[in-house]
Length: 390
Image 1 (cartoon, rainbow, N blue to C red):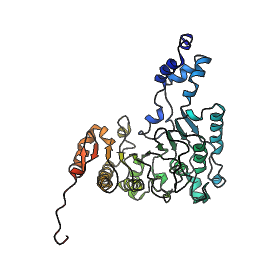
Image 2: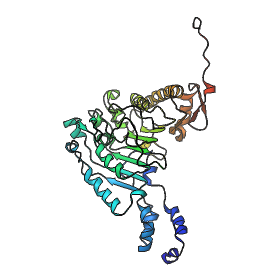
Image 3: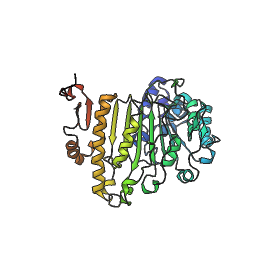
Image 4: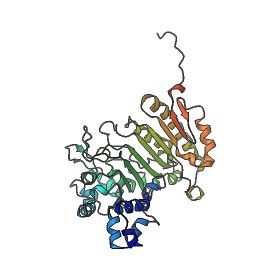
């Protein structure tokens, strides 16, 4: 078989193997409960083909690393000031990329780690550093991204890590005292940039060496996982959700973001409000998608140990959607939001509840399918003239 394939013109052979170049499992995992296994898959046809012969290995080699991953093992908060923590793992990967001339072939990158730096952060607190542009502040592991994005220009980047570590990777600070109350072993943060964006594209001012500002990302997905455990704690509503939503003083509006997905499992309504406030730093956002319940293939709703205090969970969900509806109205009129989608409509049993929730409250928006709305200014309410005001 290998001999017959090798007899084909290279262009035809490349077209054939392109059908084996399937979507990576990490992209399919974006809306599921975050897990360190997001890159695992039982199917790897391209890799299997590459093992058939030396010639096939050579012809498929560049495609094998189209979607790459880096596992961070050597992480420590004490090394942040020296800008060395995590660099060994990254440099090992980049050395391999350079040695095999793969720089232009890496289209997607997953960076993941099991290392939880929450205890270290609680002990040392955030430490001030100076980034490569001369800014002084808390930049976490910004040096890691500066190293990676100087060498590579992937179309997307996905991070999976414990919440405290993800905060460091995204140069954010948040209160750690309530992390114990949440069953969030991992969270995910995903950035995507437009096709054919040059590695030399400058963001202009402000120049900041953290992941939010190092590229003109057009899309962001934040998957924070489950808040279920916290509902069983005393005065759960006072607990602060581990989240990068508490951005360290954003360095000006992030005007390059045009779409945002927020994924969580029964977040508190006040935290949904935190997320919506974060979006105000993205004034050119045109599309927003929300998923506040488990995705359809999840078995969480059948787990009696995790599904406790149901009345509180549904109350928080209901209030959360009240805030979303209000935010849609404001962001549609005052900003550039044009599309909204509730991914919770994928859960058939929840549709009547959501239909009742949206009802006639969503003014200025036209429904265009299950859980989808588009901005329509012709549906804005007509205000009656007020006497005494010219």
